[in-house]
Amino acid sequence: MRTSVQLTADTGSWAESVDFVTGAEALGVDAVWVAEAWGSDAASPLGYLAARTERVALGASVFQVGVRSAVMTAQTALTLNELSQGRFVLGLGVSGPQVMEGLHGVGFADPLGRMAETLDVIAQAFAGERIAYAGRHLRLPLAGGEGKSLRLSIRSGTAPPVYLASMLPRMLELTGERADGWLGTSFVPEGAEDAYFRHLRAGAARAGRTLDDIDICQGAEVAFARDEAELAAMIDARRPGLAFSLGGMGSGRSNYFNSAYARQGFADVAAESQCLWLAGDRQGAAAAIPDEMVLATTLIGTAEMVRDRLAGWAAAGVDTVRLYPAGDTLDERLDTLGRALDLVP
Image (tube, rainbow, N blue to C red):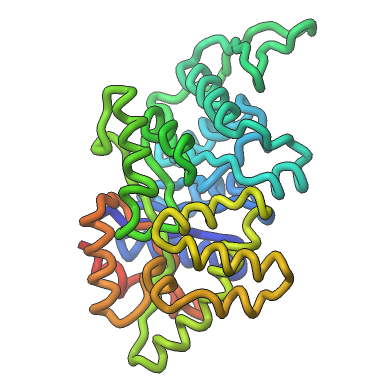
């Protein structure tokens, strides 16, 4: 498997984050991904990292569709690709109604249609074509205005690859049909075929492709326990995060994470934890998460356990592992990363 790391705004100061990325590059990782949700944007740190790194691919995970115009997304991607000398990867995702409608004032209805139209416009921009589009969500040029169809002045010898972050069946099919890679999360290899891969495969087949044409990139936290007592403490510490995903990452009607876990064998747990969370019982929501779910959805445990889980990911079809190394300090995180890299098959 290829290796990558995920960078988020809550992993420490930006200066420390840059040191982490350069340290990860020195350890041999293949790519670095920068997240964008309701904190820092992804484009700014990626531009800075382009100047501070030499070899690693630099990916957005993800630019949120609808926050930028489709053409601005293409402009940003082409600019970052030039700054990094062809190392940029454009990751796109639709986010969720709470962020899009609550934070940006952008309607969330028909996220699949918005994503498909955005991909169409980006493809025109990347190809250097005059951009003209008449869709349900995007109309370029604006009808009735004074604008005309334009092409971007920025060019790229090789357009950046496009990855999609998707979790629901129809968006997974679109990923299989049109994307160069899939940015997955909430992954349980034992349940991934029905939850994810059959939908990716169906979309790929529509385009005359197979899953071999798509980089399957999956991420999870990695942490090492010295003994059973430390492992038990690690599991307890991670229950609240899973409870937040099941109950807080979305509304009672729209929660992609809850749906994904439910499709991978944890339907009862997902429903119970979400119900408790929405009722305001955060401790109860966390307590409802069993040990087996924490272990199934992370890469934590003894070195032997982590090695076995990574082998299971590879056997399930993961091409690139996206690691979130645990540690309270920069040195601890890099140490965890180095140990994990030695175990990747």
